[in-house]
Image 1 (tube, rainbow, N blue to C red):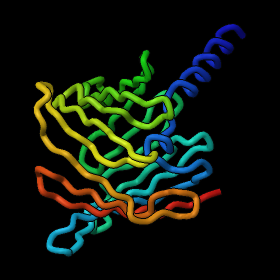
Image 2: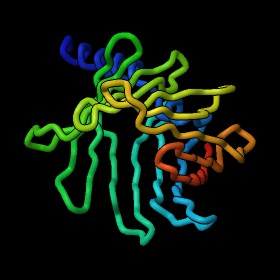
Image 3: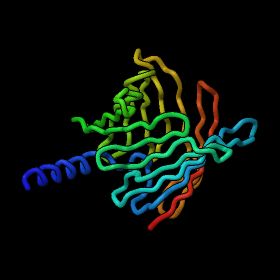
Length: 206
């Protein structure tokens, strides 16, 4: 009985500590699922890069997701388990991703193969409202993305290397919203890479 109580307590603490995916993505409460379509824009012509469907739990975390390319071929599936998230791919073995809550509004998200080989790791720093302050790659590039907001909307992302040298700056503009405040169309323009992307969102509510 005591062991069961300890396990339940750990589950509750973990659930309360980890940040909601809807807050990270600036989505409203009550959202059931959302489909995201990302396009690259060249000479005013759009080309679909991927389509991603996300299904949320009642407390605002991603329960399941599926990403396909422009031809409809599977790129990735994710499934939330009790203590971790499984990332499945058509061409390689799955990753098992664990989130560990750290002090000062931080999470360390690490992904491993079944043989415990680490594949990636990132440190997420959050604002008090659950939005992302910055993300540091802690495994490959060691780049840090800094997130900036205006009127509770994401306005730009600045990317720097571990020596604080600027890699890129992405300007973000939401040009259409629904009645609940969810962004339906977002334009992202890269200052250095000179890329332009359009992201469309199709949310469903309870």
